[in-house]
Length: 283
Image (tube, rainbow, N blue to C red; front, side, top):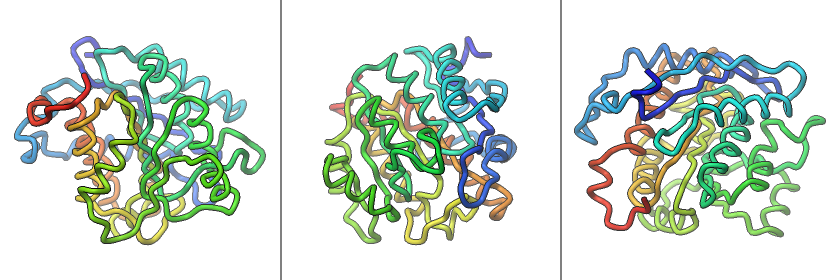
């Protein structure tokens, strides 16, 4: 039940502003279906993550009047479900759903920043006639709280100029980087409370081809999970989203990877094992 759960999952089957391959509206159900086949026990954390209680809310219907109305619907829904003793995670759907989720989370946690994992900058002020589309997500989030981008390897000249002029924390992804030093640099840029926002195209297409805009040269499984673990040791994860799974564009394994990543984030955010390891995590 929602009362007995520490984590709430809100599925948002929405992809109205996609510009290349659509289909991420099918992502939430694909993730939920794959999740039924996950082992509940996590050997890394040595615990059954499901024991913390995970409530899955009904699918949130799209608002057909336009993207800005949909962002408001997500915001109002998250605001009604979220509380300081629960962690709310969105599963999409396109990446724009993060806007409503982050806005509602920021109302609860003033000292908030977003760890933004994405192959793209998403810093256009406007794209294809809207300020609320998937190519402007990071730009809108900056109007709410600071963000730290990781995994970027595809941006426009407009976005590059914006990063240069504003100093947005952006870590362009290059294979072979020394992970511990990169982790420390990222963590130092984050506020005490962190919202994790994942566009699955941050992963390399060899393990995540089922996305609308795949980019070569991405992160691999242990690279993303080791980063998330490192963040959870030093900061408090208070909300998250996993977006842009387009299941028909790749093998069924991609849906399983996405479901596993959601489960991993839940584990890192709630594990008392990790809390015991950390000596400087903000409560």
